[in-house]
Image 1 (cartoon, one colour):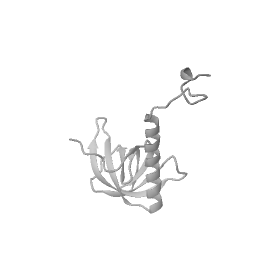
Image 2: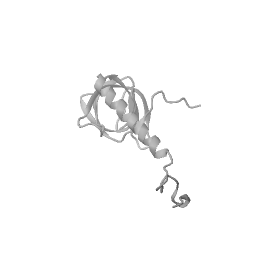
Image 3: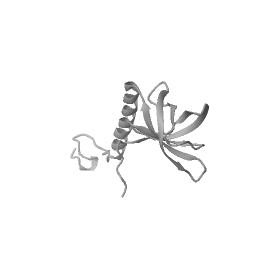
Image 4: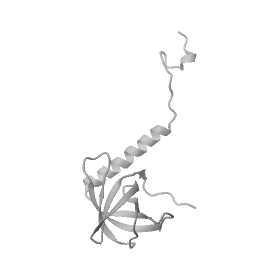
Length: 132
């Protein structure tokens, strides 16, 4: 049985830079939550490794600088790796930006999944039911 996710996640497809062993590694984010993010990496990494990451959110003018820890890693069929990162050190403002981003996506997603009624005019009933 699948365990429910502890924190809601929002899809995020963004370029990221990870500083690993003195090298800049270009990665691609997949999703993020209030506590961590998932990303695609071209190289493996040791689980429990801690490193700074630079994350770009479209709702912000600047990149966020965070420290993260690799908590899980899976090799992908294409030869790359999926990394599950947990934030370690983050200031309150960055935490609020991430939380706002996730909740904005959730609100938009819920709105898009809610049936929208179109064609109302006049007295608020559908056009074909109006009397005048």
